[in-house]
Each structure stands twice: as structure tokens, then as C-alpha cells.
Length: 222
Length: 330
Image 1 (cartoon, each protein chain N blue to C red):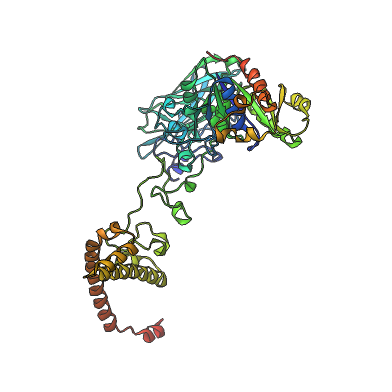
Image 2: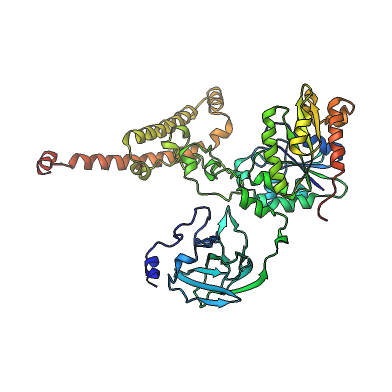
């Protein structure tokens, strides 16, 4: 099963939530942000190489606390990568037991659209500000156009009670508040997902709730 | 018919008038044909019997007009398909030329409905579609075969594919000019813009050719306008326009040679202590390993430059330009 984690704006915490969700669902997180990768890479082939036809998707997967298919950082790599290959790549790493969580780029171009078109469902990440809602609505429209059903909305980094009802009404999916927690911010760089290290914290519980929503998704195609 | 001649004078690859620019590619290469497809039902109406056009024929219930322009081993095919029926109908336009269709493309992806055999799409009731493509084959007559597959049912909307998405949303790859050039250079300004578009296999890890052959390349930051090969031999200096800049390059080269010569002098018949210091200053034994060879090349280059300089000086002295007389004549 392929689940896309998308957002209208960048910098709202998609990569962190994708990483945490992959930890909660024991899945694989794919950093599909071809131009502005976030998840740690290291040595070996990455998604740029795979999309340029230079590496097999499975050999680019890194084992670790959370399995990651990282993305390269170079402009040349981003240019050589053919996003049309992403469909085959995600299918190749998809596993009935372990869902694939795709960390999508922000925006409305094909690099954001292709993961949504390939995914069985998507989760939308938004900031708790009022202006963020408009961007979330646009991305929601894009996801709808591309047949990626919206499963849940994560209102990320909340410090006070967010207007969840407004998000739910505008986007038509259950919204979950993920509190601002420095441990969540550090999770990707330390490789220690909060959902495992502090499962009973507010942050850990919110991730778990989102993961539960994702577990309800059934693949659209066989 | 007269139009054919008029079009024959236009440069190859020119698109039909009124087309938008979003169809990329040209007649050369596999990037697709220069012509597009036009869903505007009115287009068929005002283009009556232009080109060498075949007279209207009827195939599978469609009124069909077509023409081929033969241009340097590439044929440009145009076909107008009119649907006189009062229902939308599906049409298949199949290429009969002896090569694959180069369809119109957007962001490198063929437009919807096109494949290497031709086009499949809908013609609106009572309307027309004008299609165009290129093909690397000589013209045949007729260039296309038209068939229909009945009326269109609305239920054929399939899942969007990755190609559909790229076509609709556009690729987000960084522009070629932003990508560091294959030399591993810093992509600074003028250099990047001269880089041919790479379908790059990552930046070439190989460093720029260093000053390992005794040619002046060592003080790279001072060479002319970042010339990547660092060659400041006579030819290059003459080619590059401005005398003052070149003088700086020559100066830099001479400085580099001088530094090497000085190092060589310090090491010539030196005591152990002096030699140790000199080697340490030069950056280790590796830096001195090639020094004898480099100095020999330097000497040869300097001799060549000196000889040429002397000859040029001689010739310069022997000239006698009658500038004043010329000025009066001008």
C-alpha cells in the first residue's frame, strides 16, 4: 500500500510525520522531495539514481530504526531524475506487510502530483494557522483530481487548541492535532521516532492516531 | 495548393501559425514533431483546400483532408478530421509512413492520445480536429488511415498515469543552467550558461586538468575569465580580446613559473636542513616529486615564448604604419 504525505506549503513537518508514520506502521519511508530532500541519506544509491535508471529501487533502501529510501541532494541528480519512473519504483518497493510512506514535495508541479497519482491514499499536513487552510484546500483539490483519497489531516506543531473543526469541514477528512514537541523535531536527525521512544507522550499518541487512520486504508488497485 | 509553396519557404521546424508554444521539440531527434493538435472545431473550416491538400475524402464516416510536407528526410503530416454526425465520435488516425510517429509533446511527454502509431481521440459532434505530427520517413499517399470506433461513452476516464501528471502539471526539475557543469566546476556565472544541457550522469568527479604538464594552470583563480582549461599559450592569449586581462594571465603564469624555479633553486645543492625546509614549504615530498620534469617543461616553454617574443619584437620594430597618411585618406 502506498500512502502519500502531502502539504500545500513546505516546512510544515511532512518529512517528520512521514518518518514517524513509517515507524508506527513498520513501513518504508520514501523521500520523494527530488529538489529539496530532507531525510538522511548516506552512502550508496539514492532515489535520484533510481529515477535516472542507474540503480534498482530495492538496493537504494537503507535499513535502520526506520527503513528509508533517501533522495540525493544535488541539482544534477534532480535534473537527471525522471519523475515518471516513480510509479514503477514505488510499486517495486511496495510490500503487502509494510506500507510505503511517500514524503511528497510541496507545491503543484508534477513532482508533487506523481506521488499523489500513484498513492492509494494521502495524508495532508497543515500548519495550525488560518492562512494554511487555503493551501491545504488547493493540495486537497490536486489529490482529489489525482484520485488520492484523503484519509486524514495532521494539523502540525500546535501550541494551543487548533480549530480542528474548521479543517475538517474545509477538507472533508478527520483532523488530528500534533503538538509542537522538540523531540518530534529532532526525530529525523537522531533517527529516534517519538512514536517508539515516547509512545505515551502527546506527540506519540497523535502519531499513533494518524497511523490508525492510515491502517484503515485498503489498496485501491490490486 | 499555392500555400504549399509559401510554406516551403518557411524554415524547417516552424510551427503552423496560431499554435501555442507549449509543444516542445523539433524535427530533429526523437523529441517529437513540431506540429500540434488542435481541438478547435472551427480550425477545419478556414483552412479549406490549402497545402497540396488531398481533396476531401470520406473514411469511416469522417470527412478527411490531409497533406504532407517533405523536409530533409522528415515528413510533416497534417490531417483534418471532420465529424458530420450529431454525436461525439472516437477517431483513430493511423500513420502510414514508414517510421514511427514523432508526436507533439509537452514537457517531454507525448500529448494525450498520441503514441508511435498515431492518434486516438474524440471528435466533437459536427466539429473537427486538426492533427499534425512529424515522421522520419519519405511521404506516402495517403499519409494516414482514418478509422472510427463509434460514439464516445463518458465512462472511459481512467486513472491518471504519471505521464498524464507530468503533462498536466509540468516537470519541476531545475533548469540546466543551474546544474554545475560536468567539470565539477562551481557553476559560477558565465561558465554554467555555456554548459550544454546535460542528461547528466552526476557531476563528473574528475577534477579539472591541473597544472601537471608544466603548463600554466596553477594559479587558477587568476586565469582569464575562468577559462576552464587554464591554457594560456600564445594562441589563447591572442584570441582573447583585451590586452590588459591577458597581461594579467601571462603575469600569473610567469609568477607560477618563478615560484617553481625558486623552489628548484633552493633545492639545488642544498644542505639537508635547507632542503627539509624547502620541501615543507612546498607542501610535502609529493609536491616536489614531479618538479624536475615540470621545470624541464617550463624551460622549454619559456624558450619557445622567448624565441617568439624576440621575433615579434623584431617584426614590430620593422613595421612602419603611415597612420597620418591613412588618416588623411580616410
